[in-house]
View 1 (cartoon, rainbow, N blue to C red):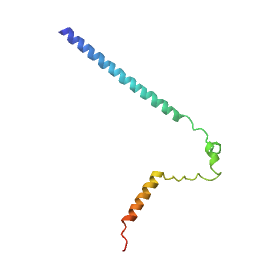
View 2 (tube, rainbow, N blue to C red):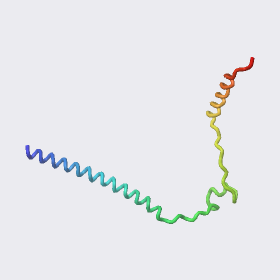
View 3 (cartoon, one colour):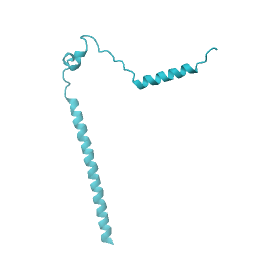
View 4 (cartoon, rainbow, N blue to C red):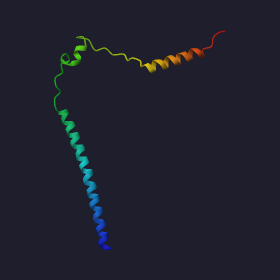
Length: 95
């Protein structure tokens, strides 16, 4: 029985050691990821020339870009029309 207990303890320790190594590997991967991400911030920002970008051809020189207005979807328009019609029906007339 003593040999069996020793064997179980060894297996338990081996499993815990294996789990610890796996957790450590995952943590190392995270550290490597963040280290590479942060290294991007150490590089200087490239010069920016708005006239040379692809967007520049859509803007007039010296004027800021206009804000686009969103179009209403067909479903939104239909639901508004339906609700407006039902509101008109519920309004009592003076007759």
